[in-house]
Image 1 (cartoon, helix red, strand yellow):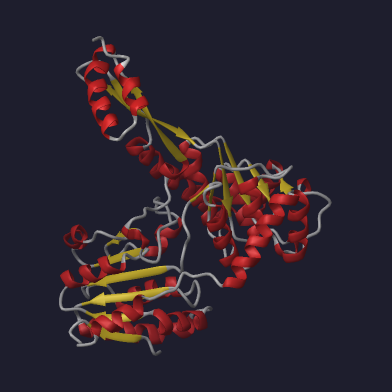
Image 2: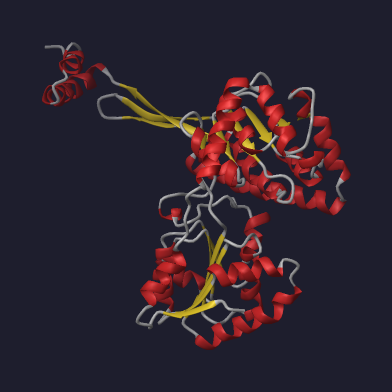
Length: 435
């Protein structure tokens, strides 16, 4: 395997490091134009356009969009049809996710107010969004875990109506995805996908209601469509390729770390897996594990292409330097595979999720640990957060000024308003002054 091996002591490390980090998020111009055409068509023709594109791209013909909606009974039937082990796993993961997000709600998702010394009331009113749309991939990439991760925080936040769209190429429905929708309490499910589904959610049609926000992953067409409709509706994020960065002190079995690196590389050829360690012998041991384990993997060719194209094993001067490099990358998933992980966690400022200790594989976070697996990618963890309850709420400021408060605040506001040349602002404040 030709995975690159770097050392921070090398004279050209900075250049090699920048080349490693580079990834273009630009969308192909042809995709952008095609998506723009689809959005305009759905906005103009509504249901008719959705039906046309569903027939063309998913090879599913239907007399109406209403015929593409799945009722609660069909979701329940899908849940009843999966194996008992699968049903138990979905329920277990859902319960842990709900518990985590309920704590998140308690921590940051409730209204608050206070009265200051002159009796003025100030505060913040937190309210859930009325209706949200969840995009769930279908076909080859069908992820029931993504249904739980998107729907459960929306449900905990108190969203009144959760609409899910999922493509079903050739009419093939993934029973685990539908079962997950049942477990997560999704209200309505439409078997449509692609840019046309995003357009229908953003603009509304005769059958598919307009939503306030769209969340969930998708292909390049879906990502482009979400960018186009942002402003008409909210979106969660524009996700790039999946990433994992492991900081290791050499105490974790090399096979474990090798498989953790594989776990992201198997997503697709553009996924990125990086290992940082100050122990050169350990890097060699992990490389040997990767060489030995790779032939066993069903997605070996995808893993190989990912690791050779964007992966790296980096020898650092110290664990402290490894933490500095991690902060520069701001990875989606960050594992501290060390004997004393809490020693290093305070040094780490930028990451979508931090996995502490040898037993905390990133894959547990993907499915059932409790926190959300929808995370910022491509360095956006510098300024973005995981999907959470707060993404399905909005905040409104509350202000009730007392008569006494208006006397002091009015003079300050008038002084500043006159300075800005806004006389009506100043006069509105002055009219409430007693003298």
